[in-house]
Amino acid sequence: MNFKELREEMVKEQLAGRDIKDKRVLDAFLKIPRHKFVSEESQSSAYADYPLPIGENQTISQPYIVALMSQLLELKGTEKVLEIGTGSGYQAAILAELSKTVYSIERIPSLAEKAEKLLNELGYKNIEIKVDDGTLGWYESSPFDAIIVTAASPEIPQSLVKQLAEHGRLVLPVGGKFGQMLVLVKKDKGKVETKEICGCVFVPLIGKYGYNQ
Ligand code: SAH
Image 1 (cartoon, protein in one colour):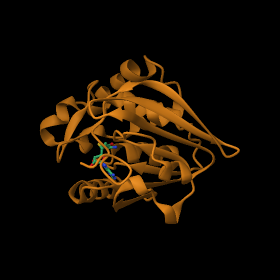
Image 2 (cartoon, protein in one colour):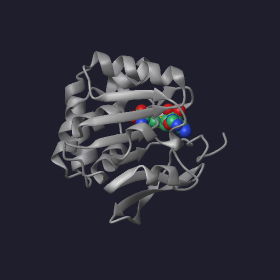
Image 3 (cartoon, helix red, strand yellow):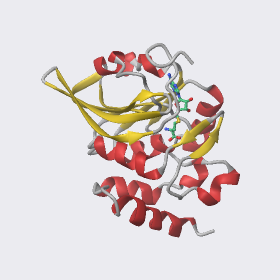
Image 4 (cartoon, protein in one colour):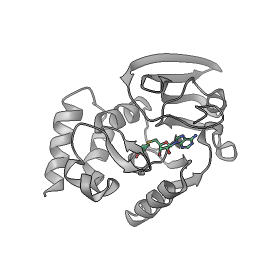
């Protein structure tokens, strides 16, 4: 299977063909071997327009949603970014291409381990992963210029808003367990503004400021 061709087609049809215009985001998608982040059985579908299983009942989002969330963060290359929900590590790799440093938190140890191994193999040196409840954020490394939550939260965790830098951006799915609204939160002169982007479906965020289970 020619993965490079599939990647180019994915970027052209699913991303640039929709509303992904940030050239740095498109380049990151052209570069990263998404098929390495999914199970062997799913490799042939790695570049398709839908989410895929990554083990432990978790999923890697559809490429378009990963791209949309990345674009909303408006990264230029100098930022410190926090991701909640490392999962396969794919979104972390995209963020590592777009920013200076990525901190990523995963609650399931086996997923964190697998992601860390793959990201090391791919040569990423600017990603730090830890196993913890990400709803608490990563206080020691805060504030963050951008925060991305890749699991569905019942509400916007104020713990994360607090760890957002001035002019920072937070993107996350907010809502019920079976369907959510993608929300963009911006902090400007201490004021917090929120904007609804589109409907989406994510696995639940489980933790102190998320769902109980
Ligand atoms: N960003 C991932 C997809 C994540 S799926 C990727 O690119 O593959 C959502 C992930 O969030 C799952 O791995 C799940 O275990 C994790 N998760 C759920 N609640 C969490 C929490 N409180 N802290 C950290 N990770 C959490």
